[in-house]
Image 1: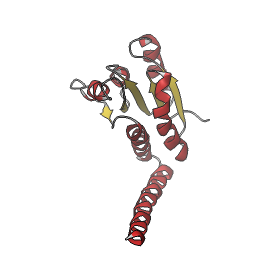
Image 2 (image 1 turned 60 degrees about the horizontal axis):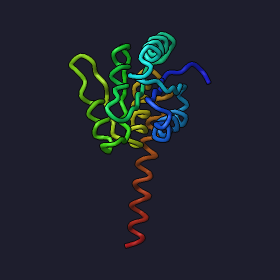
Image 3 (image 1 turned 30 degrees about the horizontal axis):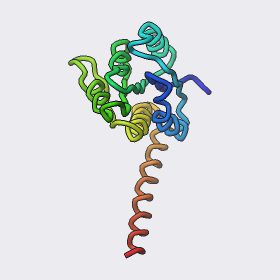
Image 4 (image 1 turned 180 degrees about the vertical axis):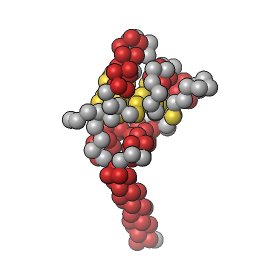
Length: 165
């Protein structure tokens, strides 16, 4: 795979079942990416080093996913000026704790927070592609085609429902 443009980080390998949704979207759009397990609390030095190195080696967007009160996205945002997209993972409090720890960032340290779980993971990847598409006409066209296919799915759903009625 070529040089990663998106770095997907997870606080635990158990988060991969959810984050596979992001990986699948990035593969669909042929966006080079990397996936790592790093913890804001258990491996903070490794996390900081990874973010600094990735930023200087071509990564343009970070997607960070963690459950519980872990604050991976915020820790990533502390070490980069690149966009950080946070994906809360379902945990003991049904993901509410993860959502709050991801969305409640102090002024001046933004994290774009997505939905809890699978939808958030998929949408984080689509948002990363949209960010990259600002300077990549090929990705911009692929996104337009994706939007058209989404509309076609809705139309097919309308046709199916009309037949059932």
